Length: 88
Image 1 (cartoon, one colour):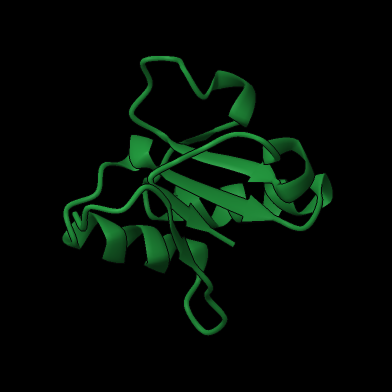
Image 2 (image 1 turned 30 degrees about the horizontal axis):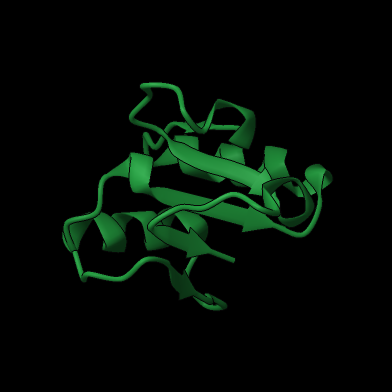
């Protein structure tokens, strides 16, 4: 991974799952990736797409748990938190 404190990745044509798979190829661990969505209503649909690719996710409230899964949260709820990679 690149040595940056926080890398923001904006995606339009890539799905969240595709972005996670790309970041894995670049050497990032799932636990270093946070996917932020506009609102909490969007979380379920993105979570479903991630599961289709066997990518587990967890809410930001579990940020400091020992889980190897991707953080999936609304932008509002993630405010003030940090992650090596933030996908918006």
